Length: 269
Image 1 (cartoon, rainbow, N blue to C red):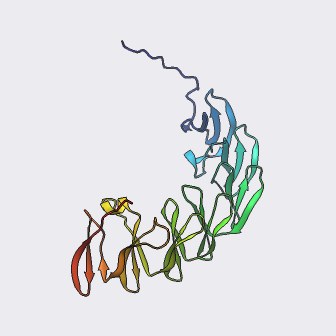
Image 2 (image 1 turned 135 degrees about the vertical axis):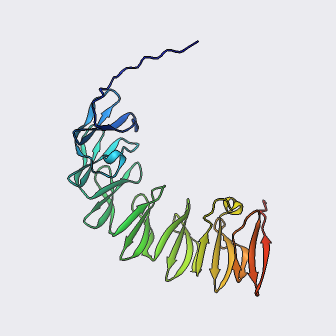
Image 3 (image 1 turned 90 degrees about the vertical axis):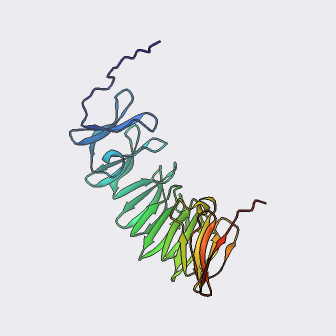
């Protein structure tokens, strides 16, 4: 049995550009260089009067799960609800969603965490910032980095030379030329004392897909540690002059001027 279909145009084909429907049935549309939002019936829920120079979805806006819209006009950003009512005025340099309850706004060199009632939860000076997938925010000031949670609570103070996400809940931190590891609550996993850390970047290396292993250097010696364990777990002792990545369970090592290979196996308790 052949299924028959009827093609209709419930929303006129008149726009210069459109985004996909998302966020509960809304889409960004552009006409004569101005952007707005329509619903699935074609009704303009946010008027087409905003600039198309934004850096978010389709140059206009993003809809979070609660139906708020970031808009941009004359290089300033604001926040509307899906009915077009102003939540935050068009005055910010940038607005980013970090959770269903909080946005980050940037204005004149300050970064603030604000809820959808317009209340400032936390604020700090900053030069650069970046948001991880789970809403944690790295903030840089005077070339030092800190880490904040979704509500603006300080997880790691702005004092580190660098903070980099290693896994979903583990961060590599650098301080005074040394490296260590903290989790996403600010708890120290591995102390800041290592001279070098080398996360495996080659996904074909089978062992590093299985383990949260990190190749490290300490006092001119190399080894591997497990960053997924409680505290420091030297999977391979930090005693080798050089050590390579694992492939098919083997890694090359140098010890006392001689080269060879070592292996490692996962032991399940």
